[in-house]
Image 1 (tube, rainbow over the protein chains, first blue to last red):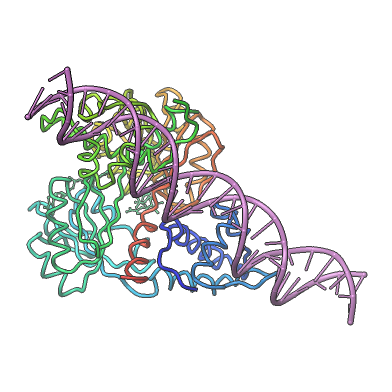
Image 2 (tube, rainbow over the protein chains, first blue to last red; image 1 turned 60 degrees about the vertical axis):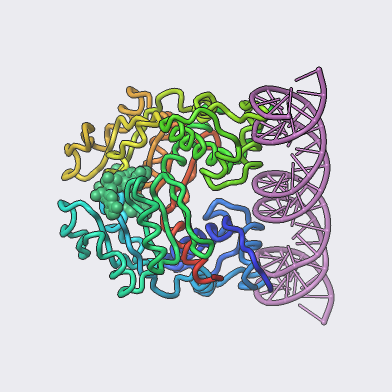
Length: 209
Length: 209
DNA sequence: TTATTATAGCTATTTTTTTCACAAAATGTT
DNA sequence: AACATTTTGTGAAAAAAATAGCTATAATAA
Ligand SMILES: NC(=O)c1ccc[n+]([C@@H]2O[C@H](COP(=O)([O-])OP(=O)(O)OC[C@H]3O[C@@H](n4cnc5c(N)ncnc54)[C@H](O)[C@@H]3O)[C@@H](O)[C@H]2O)c1
Ligand SMILES: NC(=O)c1ccc[n+]([C@@H]2O[C@H](COP(=O)([O-])OP(=O)(O)OC[C@H]3O[C@@H](n4cnc5c(N)ncnc54)[C@H](O)[C@@H]3O)[C@@H](O)[C@H]2O)c1
């Protein structure tokens, strides 16, 4: 099966499926149907099958999918069969919440460096990571083989920090600042804009319902 | 202009446009073209015009849009021409970061109540809001006319908290827990799944590039 | 007054994504 | 062994979204 472009919505759903399968596995469930997955994750069963079909045939007709097998496939597809070293820039309220979150490590994202510019914050500990000065950005990215950068600085500093990360070899950026960032085409960029999310809610409340 | 369904992607972009217009207004810019907005927010100019066309005609051919005028239109469209009272349930790392974020108030989202179950957290102050016990949920939602609820509790508690919010009259839920929530059809639900976002990055890193 | 230029609004086209529905395959049943 | 049941995988249809390009209109220059 030859595929050049996987819809982003598909990738997001695969992530959700994989977490659901993980839950089922822990509950001791051995097989699931696309219908079960659909029910558990709030999509249609055709959607589940279509999403999986981009990557191969993982099920048995009449039976369904073996939970652990499908889970392992999804983990590979999502690139979670290895560790990703992550840097967080900005150890303010949001950055430190992210740094302290255990859920990322469970999925293979290892936060290895957290940087800030505030002298009062530099040197403090977030779990077992010490916040270090921004100056160390290039050094840490290189020596720790960091591929993913998280932007948790004020909007005014976001592009500058991003440029430094990209220049030093970071391949993907998760941006929490409310700023449209420019990155080279080969760098993967995602924006998590919390205000936008709230505003989608207010739109829906104000517009219909 | 009769419209029944606005693409969610459109609503998200409108939010981004509005913030860009806000920035332009502060810089003293008086008019913009769809091309300028496109440039500033990373979309195509046709997309900008299409998005706006769902709601009316806001520009002048040959000229463009008056910045403040278009901004005000977007604010109305997004339902930001009023205040929305928000409750945050869960005052842990993420919940407190959200509670302390000033950016929400700037857009009309007023966090009026923050609840938790941890006795060590209850009674502490987040800015000028005191964290209160979960038991007050129904009382606060009713007396403060809260329409938006933010779920920042562990996944295991998310559905239960959601049910209580919905039962008490909350109309929209922003869910930060990695749990697929069930809400009645008339309640607006959005999920901000940070792990999914990281996994879209790792997928892209692992799959092509 | 008449071109010329810029750009919004709109319509048509293309592309992408989702949904539908059914043949094929595996298992269970009579 | 034949038949019924379940559920995948997939091609086709439908729906949704994005893109392209044309038309109308306003401002400006000739
Ligand atoms: N906290 C939230 O809930 C929330 C919600 C939506 C968006 N955001 C966005 O996330 C980002 C961080 O928000 P926050 O609430 O944590 O802000 P914050 O002010 O608490 O933290 C920002 C941190 O970045 C540091 N910093 C500033 N410039 C820096 C630089 N050049 N390099 C490294 N560190 C630098 C500051 O010292 C500070 O510690 C902001 O862009 C904000 O708009 C936050
Ligand atoms: N922190 C992050 O960066 C991050 C990232 C991704 C997802 N999340 C999700 O966000 C949610 C909160 O994460 P966190 O890191 O803030 O966790 P946390 O443990 O720091 O905070 C959770 C808080 O919820 C409180 N709580 C537990 N049950 C409650 C209940 N029934 N009612 C009210 N409060 C209750 C706890 O006392 C605690 O203070 C979790 O679902 C987590 O999976 C967080």
